[in-house]
Length: 53
Image (cartoon, rainbow, N blue to C red):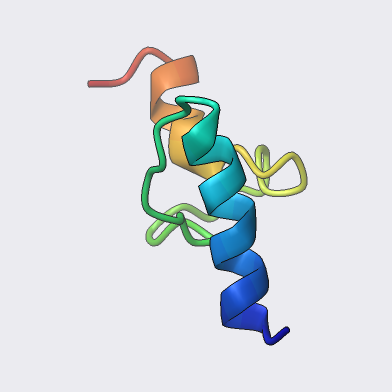
């Protein structure tokens, strides 16, 4: 099994459990010098957590 097949197998499993599949997010957010959420993998949610629109 190659990486593409493993990833699709993983996504198919969660899709079968009725989870919503969303696009991947970058590890480092552009124009954000902080690393506050990087290690937690929560970069894409930082503005939400901080109450920004």
